[in-house]
Length: 371
Picture 1 (cartoon, rainbow, N blue to C red):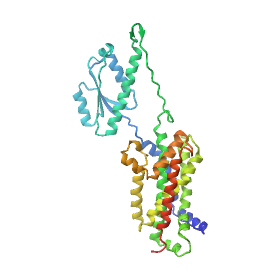
Picture 2 (picture 1 turned 45 degrees about the vertical axis):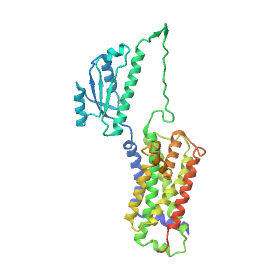
Picture 3 (picture 1 turned 60 degrees about the vertical axis):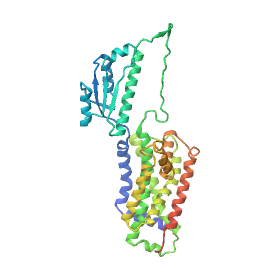
């Protein structure tokens, strides 16, 4: 019986000319557009520099900052007040003021002070812009120290301290490598969560579900027949995402594809079961869409996709513990970035198994064959 029900679901799915196109076009659009749009890197920051020193050393600093891809040098005003007017007009985001005697103080061994003023109306842009500029100034200071003769103490040269930075798992700090695995989770959630929910409610409105209700098919068989086609679609979507990540960005997982498919086999029943729970408690298609979108928006925002969970308040971190998307996002990033295996991901495996059991038992129990 379940075989015929699954065949019916596939026929009903592909009878709609829009849904098959959505299943294939939507992942392509997300994978092409979102890695460029959902990027927390701040670039093209408008910068005004007030150079009060007009020396060789200060000019080199201005040129070094201008060569950065993060800043766009918009003006070189004569005074700080003029630069501040640019911030008020919105033509400048950050101001750098180089003091008088900047070169003289440096040569005499003093520590000259630079003023970095950032427009913090946009807190992210202001803080990151100030951090980027401070990093460039620190790097420039190291260059100057390397060019200055080393002073001696009691006839012996002062020791130099060298710092070597190694970025583990993402050496080039490529933000796309961090975002793309999480975007795959979002795609699976939207497609395999929304479609089952809308499918059942659509049959309720059309009245076709009554034909199933009068048959001796039990609730478990009915729910399984509804979910299995979307699980298979989820694997197809995940495979498309793998291919697009490799073709468009050259990104391949450091771990094994089989590990990802294994966790996806558990995650897909979670989101599709949750979608069926909402459909079972909804009377109309519009109601199901609004309720599903409400929960999906909260789950995606609290999954660590855009904001690191460790950066959230402690109470928000506790809420993320009941969010299944959080655990699959951790799985995808661990496998893609660090090459983790099942042994390393046992806590996430246990959490997803628990969510899958709860969601699907709830879906079966909440489905009523008769009103």
